[in-house]
Image (spheres, rainbow, N blue to C red):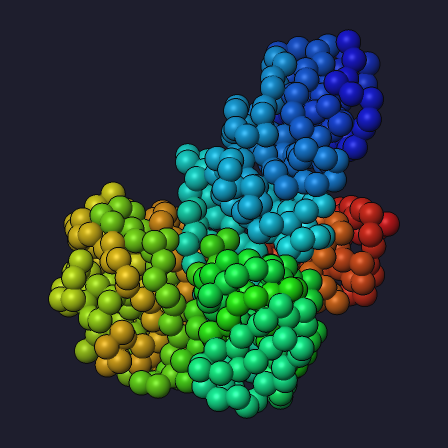
Amino acid sequence: MSIVNNAINDVAITALPDAPINVDTGLPESTIAVATDGGISQIGWDGVGTGNVWDLITFKPNTVSFTAENNMFFDCDVVAGGSRFHRVHPILTADDTVALSSKGNSLEYYMGASAAITYPADLALINGYAAVSVPGAIGFSSSTPGLVLLSPDHADNSKAMAAFITDTYNTGWQVGDQRATLLCSTDDTDLVGGDLVTNGDFATDTDWTKGTGWTIAAGVATASGATGSIQTDTSLSLIVGGTYKATIEVKNYVSGTVKFENSGIFTGFSNPIYSANGVYELEFVAVQSGALGAYGNSFNGDIDDITCQAIDPDRSVNANNLKVVGNVARTEVAPGAELMAYGPFSVTDYLEGDYTADLDFGTGDFSVSGWVKSSSTYDTILHRAISSGGLLIRTGNSGHVDVFMSADTTYTLKLTGSVAINDNAWHHVVITRDNGTLYIYVDGILDVSIGTITDITYPSAITRVGQRVDLTGAAQYLAPIRISATAPSAAQVAKMYADDLPRFNPKAQETLPGASAAVTGVAEDDELGFLHVMQSDGTSVFGGSSGQSPLVRISENSNGGTTAIAVTSGMVARK
């Protein structure tokens, strides 16, 4: 017998609970998992005998380990080190084969969001590459670097939860088919709305620097075989690290290509090339202030409008971002805490999302969770409608939670909570519909419920956070809001609340502290339960399974590494 491939990437060893005692050593028989370029080979005790070598044929795994439930946890990809796909697989008692495009006999199946468009994962994760992982935690070092925490649902893992942590945000627990994860910032800079481009509609032949072949007249910028740029005379005032959406409208296209001219305001983002009529959008994170415009390559055609506005990003895999209307302030949820509170909101200051079918839940399951701080009444948490009616979640006239649901512009009150939350303290509110029953949870505990299958598919509906669509109910302060097509269980709601709550403590830290979010190693202390996350310039410690919140960073140091980390009983080895 031999292993599946001689190119070995990782090895893990454990003793299963039912392992017999070896008569020569007096120790339990071991079970060994070997990650190779041809798949996983399992050697030793398999629950039946000790002399077997079983092969799990799959794409190239980079790491392998054993879970607390005594299953194998490993990554795999079409190339060594890609590590976009992660699985939990039961102990082998025979050879098995798992295709990259199917779950097969695996118990859990996770992958990057771009791959999940094609493949049927339990959960879609951030688009990270070059992963290092242990059961329940995956660190990505490239593409979208960061840390992913996993909380599986052993009954139905499509309802598992994941949290994404980077150097700029922490999503908290997202459940199942997550559709939007909002208000996750750790930046206390106020959000300023409106178009940042002066005369972006080319109403006059001013405010633009025109290269050869560009002219402005009759409300358009015309390119006549232009190879070069037209850009704003003055720099756009951008927040470094802020997220923005630029738009460009191409009309009367004849030939050539055009793209955004960005004068260095963003780097590391794809800048697509356009060669047809249409309105095109580009979202980017600003690295500096600067000019914006268009760059033509033998371009013949018109540019009708160029705009740029601040957005608050959706941190789920769907990018259902919110545009900023007016001025939305951001302040610490508690003194010294990283997490930001948004608000107070007003009739002129709120966040708004365009229509997306992602939030058309019909008569099916869904959930909305959010943190609210109010000393008033009629605070709007979220409203999705065309002009009125629709789905509205707010505080009522006694400070309790109201849920309105209708398929038209009529406000129809479906459920009113019994717990008042307008005491000027932070409260966690979760609204779920699960198999035709609507629930309100407050601070992790079920408040009230009622049966309803009201259709909440609203074609053309916009979504507002902090204000009603009809501008009659501003909120005071809000913090992370998460929307899903999955209804969490009562136990999951309780975990969301319990793990989120320490983020609202004074001085609570919750992001990766390095110069970037690239993770080079992860290890869980097998005795103390803390999760150690290594970066090239330091190591962070999160609560892990220690009884403290896994979402909060409890310590950090400057001892980094680039290859591997191991921890036991507080002793750490790095390379």
